[in-house]
Length: 179
Image 1 (cartoon, rainbow, N blue to C red):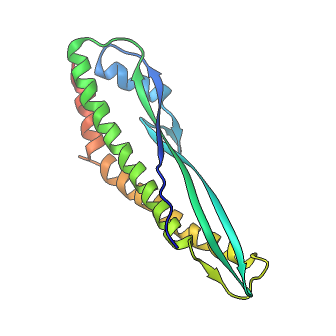
Image 2 (cartoon, rainbow, N blue to C red):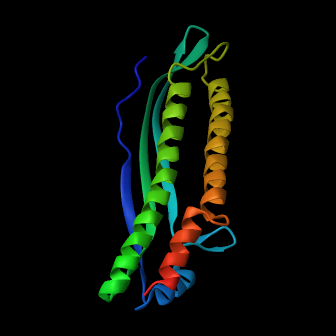
């Protein structure tokens, strides 16, 4: 069975921040950034994943014969509400480019997860399941494992990027200490 050709839809959802210096912009991010976990963050990547699946009884078994994902990835990123002074604009551009690149890595791990789910699901067969009930339980178990690995990859990546000397920490320091 062939894997379906699909394309993730990626969208950016900006949130407004204010300030005329790097420090003021970062302070505004702290006040207005998206909530994730215990507090506010600079940026956030979320996704909505739905599937079109066809479960077909074949003899006494059940087989997934169609398995098409629809994936929408949303990147929530800060955006200054007003024009920035030239020196700050350059500093901001370096900061937001680094943050966007970080979030795109999360987007790529989400796409990889969907491809793994697709590969695991298509053609999945469960014996002694003519009503196609056991297959759903087995699929849910497998998807939970795949999803768990993707979430752990994201946490591991963030720990490195946001840790002491990490890329995000460096971007923040350059923004806050810049013009």
